[in-house]
Image (tube, rainbow, N blue to C red):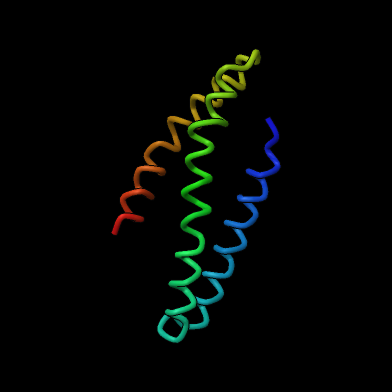
Length: 93
């Protein structure tokens, strides 16, 4: 499995978080519209990323021949479940 797309999405998400921090530090009230736009634009990347990890990456790790990677895949899927659920609940607001 090629994980370059996952790495690219992580980099995009981290870049957007940095931009949100800068905007918030510059003043939430003054930058509210830009902050909102950035959150909305990040939403689709995060939603897709979490879904692909859950439906493709973690199961692929679990099916592999490496027991340690299989264990890690299961652990990551277990750990990320509540995060993905919380994100879905937030996104439905």
